[in-house]
Image (cartoon, rainbow, N blue to C red; front, side, top):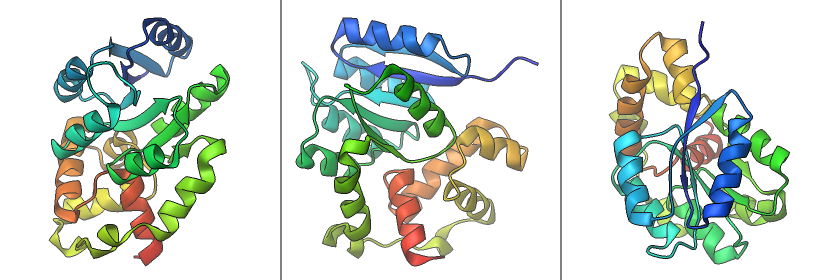
Length: 217
């Protein structure tokens, strides 16, 4: 039986880095880069059209800021795992990325084998972050901000099927694993995940999981 690969979209305006990352990912049979681009505008189009499992997104793009791309994709309910992959380790960029729906934050100076390990963690539904910025992310996840606290997250709005998927999401299961667990197709899971995010006012799995753990539902 042929192995189902996790699909990846690369959005980065450095051609050499994009090529290097693509070659690295190509050495791992669990992943497939289905598209790449150096344009933020084209990146948005590809993300919306292809809805890959994972998007590696740079912040400093020539035509468009990566954080704006992130905001746009989350506003339009793209359910891909979006990982910021950048050279920026500033607190402002990290917190902005988290607040706008990033599922993780990695720095480009990481070792190649560590990037592959991170991708495996992402594919398994885990939250990933670069070790050097962990303390900033943990502070945000612990305390958040007033706008996050005031948002309504009413799980009673979910249908029975959405409840099932919600409970698997907060356990860290990926769309593929949820589909397998519930014996449904992955495209159906993606539709339900979008609905769950919209009903509960969440932008990412990270935000939803942290809220769930804090409230011990």
